[in-house]
Structures are given as structure tokens and as C-alpha cells.
Length: 486
Image (cartoon, rainbow, N blue to C red; front, side):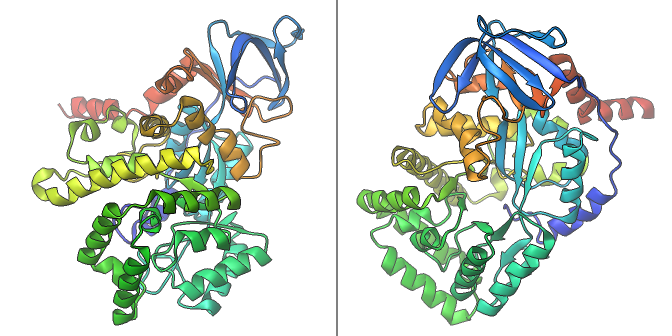
């Protein structure tokens, strides 16, 4: 997560607790029939033309050719002619602390999210959304970050050694979090103790690959997902052994796992050398290991792109910033311009982004499981909107539109071991459905052309989506406030 302030999560826990959220309403009848719609089968990659989908009590009751499906008289009909149905999308890497603007996810067709640092408030939100008291996505909630001594983020669970690693897992179990979030500065003994304790307690762990652990070791240890492609480039370097010796020597000289992060000059040299020594054969073996071990990759290309092009208008002038609560705006839209940024660092970050996109395409060919996430709450990573950007960047990297779509649907369900209930348009699955006005397999940008959304069977038509987006538009509120002053 981008270093905004080391006390950021604690501050926003207090902020979130003080927010009053007005309940939202939507059409919620027991049964719907979407007729003559083109269904995107994300598993086969094919379009099933002229289908009828019957939704009842929050589930897909029936789906099949329109010619053979009898529509119940009690069902509310929705004409799907010329439209394309896809499963609800998932953003598998977010941080967010405002319940009201969680609506932005389903308003953009994102019906599920994975929180990469859970706080107690999130569990309340999850209950409210599940019980339809308020509008929001399905939620998977991770633990408080587990990090080493001198943790990067204030409020992290500290694990300095193996004993504290095991204790950290017990703390997470008491939090009732759904997985352990591991972070960059965990010492090796603490990390592997966490991995063993998670296995014993049938609990997943996911997050950053720690600096002092190789990506291959993390995969073999059972890390469920790796975020941001961190440490992958180093793992693909023919000079990995040499570079790891330098990292270890620097760490030992300070006796602090975080010493490496503090030494920016060393990190720059490591990245530059890793770029120069990228070994395709080594990468191939690593990616084969990921595929064999079912180690998911969540590349968060959106935040990597935004940081690489932070000074550019295409990032700075994101029109959807108007939907972000004013209290968050200065964090999400930092006002640094080129005069305040190191141009050499910017250039390096762009080279690294290009290489990471190449790596992602190679991973896809190697059948490494990929999930889509945005690192929402980082610079210009916005709830709901940025998930579509992530899919577009995946395609720009070389994935086919169907591969990108799978990363946000069936792969997300498989990662959560929920493919029997989510991730595709099949009878018996959750009624999270997005109707599009154009074919996303022809052009991935068509995922933005949303006609309507079903959130666990609750129907949000285009009028509802527009009205609720308008209600969240802070630019109008600011304009009205200025008028009242005059």
C-alpha cells in the first residue's frame, strides 16, 4: 500500500466509525426474468446467445435458451435483447474506510471485494450488506497486517521471531478474519512459522512476499496470493543469489528486517540489476511452480501505472475523483507535480511497469492463476471505477479480454473456494449479474457500458445507478455550497 501516512488506517477507523449512512433502496422483488440476453460463459470463453435467466430469492434459478425457458407469470421481465450478461466483478485487493461510498463498487458492477487490511468496522459493513440493510458488495476481510520489527504501518501485528509469528496467527483467529495478511518486513523465521501455523489451523495467508523470502519459497510455503508482483522480478533474475546476499548482508548490518527498505540506494541498484539480468528460463520454472502450487498473482497494475505516471494529466485529471469523499481526496489525489518528483525514479518506475506487464502476460501463458485487484485507496485508485482500468491494463499487457474477465470473476471465486456459488452464470449460483450494452469479449472497455446490475438478486436499473452516482457527486455539493456563500 502506498505510504501516505503510517497512522493512516487507525485514523480512518475513527473516521469511519463517525459516518452516518443513509439506507439505500432498490427494486427487490422475489423473481426476475432477463429474456433474450447474450450470456458470457467465462469458463468456456464463449457467448451463449439468446438466453433467459430466471433469478429468484438472490439466486440464479434457471438459465438456458430463451426458446426453451418458460417465464413465470410472477416474474418481472427485463428485456435483454442486444445486451450481454456477465457475472458480478470482484476487486480482490482494496483498502477502504467509508461505508457510504462502498456503494461505488456495485454501482460499477463490482459485486465483491477483498479487504487487505480488515478493521472491526468492516465486519459490521459486511453484515449490513449481506442483510440488505445498505447497498454494498460481498466482502472477504483479511487480518490486520502482520509485519516484522519496526513495521511499515502503525497498528500492525508485530512478529519479530517464530514464536511471535505463531502468536500472530492466534490473534488473527480471534479477530475472525478470513486470512492472514503478511507484509514485506517479516523475518524469515517469523514468516515460515506463520505459514506452518496457518496450515495447522486451515487458514489462508496472503499479501506481500517478504524481502527476506524468495517468491519460490513463499509459493512452496503455501502463500495463497502474492500482491503487486513484488519480488517477482528478483526471483526471475539470473543474479538472484548474488542480489539476495546483498540484501541479507544489509539486513544483518542493521539487525532490522526493515533496513533494506530504508536503504533506497540499494533497492534501486537491486531493481536495476534484476531488470538487466531477467532470465526467461528461470522465470518459466518459477511460473510453473506457481501454477503447480496454485499460487495466485494479484498484479494491481492500476496502482503501478498510476505511480509511474503520477505527473501526467491522464492520471491527475481522473473525472471520477468527484465521487470520492472530500476527507479522502488529499490521499487519493496527491498534488505532487514533476517539480517535486525525481525524474530518474519516474523513468525507472515506467521501465519496471513495462517489465511487470510482460511478466504478467508470460504468467498467463504459463497458466498461473491471476486475480484482478486495484489497491484501492492508493493514488487515483477509485472504488469500482478502477477495477475496469485494471482489466484494461491486463489486456494492454497481452491478456485476452476473456482472461481479464476471468481474473475478476471465476478466478476470484476459485481463489475464495467459492466456485460452486459464485463466479459464473450457472443455476444455483448467487444472483450477482451485470448487464452490458456491448460485448466485453470484443473490447474489454465494454465492461464500463453498464445497463443494470443485480446485487444478490436486488435489481439496480440504469436510473437507479445514475441517481445514486449523482448523490455521491461531491463536485455538485461543493458547487452548491459556494453558491450559498454568495
